[in-house]
Length: 224
Ligand code: BEZ
Image (cartoon, rainbow, N blue to C red; front, side, top):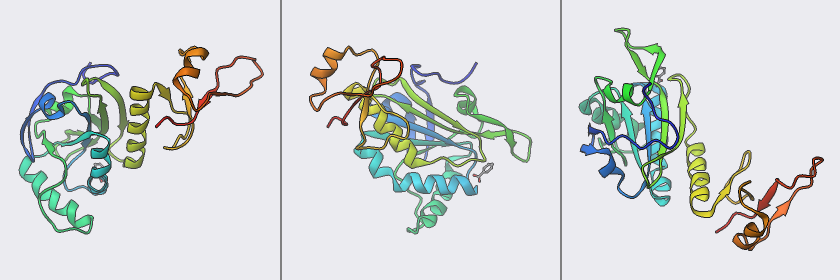
C-alpha cells in the first residue's frame, strides 16, 4: 500500500520545484523537515494555507525545520500562484515564497506518498491531493503525519505546536499532555523509572494521586 508510516524513512525522490530540482534527502540535510501537500493551485483554501505557512516560515526556521509544499500542478503554475499567495498576505505579488513547492503534475509522488483524496476530483475525474503533513526528524524518519481531506484547511499553529512536542520528546525525553501549549508542564514518559526521572528533571516530578493507586500521572515543568 502506498503511503508512509511512523518510523519509515523519507523516500529520496527527485522532483522539480519552484526553487529548482531537488533530491529530497539533500534538501532535508541534517534538519527537521515538513512536507505538506495541497489539492491544487489557484484554489481558495490552499491559498489561505500557503499564506499562513509563509507567515510562519521564520518560526519553522527557528526550530530548524525545512518546509516544502507539494501540489499537482506545474512549476510555472506554482510560480504564478505564489504571486496570488503573497498578495493575499498583503505583500508584493512576487513569485518567491520562503519555501519551495514541488510540481507533481502527473501525481506520481502523490500516489507514492498516499496523498490522494478520492472524494475530490478535477474536471477530468482525476483525484486531487489531500492535505497531508509529514514531519521528518533529522534522521529522515517520519515522526508525525496528519491527513485532512481537501475540503478542510489545516491549522498551522497546531503544526508548530506538534513540532515543539516532537522536539521536546527528541531532546528532553518527555511527552506532552492533552491541549499542551509551550510553557505548560509536560509528562514523564511511562517507561522512565522514578529514580531516573528525579535525576533527569531537576525542577521536580509531581505525581497526581489516582483511585487505582498507580503513580503514572507524572508531570514536570517544561525543560529548557
Ligand atoms: C480549496 O483549496 O479551496 C479546495 C481544493 C480542492 C477541493 C476543495 C477545496
